[in-house]
Image (cartoon, rainbow, N blue to C red; front, side, top):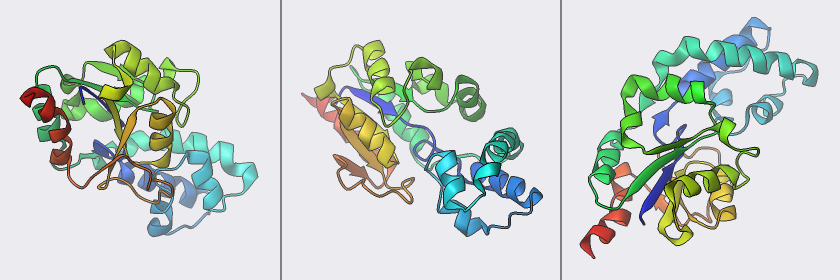
Length: 213
């Protein structure tokens, strides 16, 4: 593999507490009591689907989604880089002929908000965000944007993420998908992953073979 395209939430950054604690505060303020453990069962699925799964009244969903978005920055301090991720990214950067990019459903301001405190941007040559494609995951559009920018061939490219939507987008784009076991939660349908990584360092050998040939 020459081209490594990464998701962010649940892949590079542990953002579960940021999203779930902010949601819990919004729900509690509206008299909707849900235990934290129940909230975490929805992590990794789209916001609207999460609220439906939590039995939030349909009439309140739009209002709660807006309040949730506004509340998230107040829990920014909860975000963590998964152990081993920075070392893995640095190792990929050290390999000749390897390109590393981000493709996320985050908007540009969210990407900067969440990645900048850790200095992770320096490891990537391209960033594809929500504004860069008309359709988001599970459609292949944003991955195809990233591949075009990298001038990447499908057979030399892998998308690495933590959800079934990541897998579907990768396969729709005609590339391999690597599932990160440390971030994948509550995700049916990921058995079709081409690779499963238990730890970040397991990603590097996919590129190391290129440098040994």
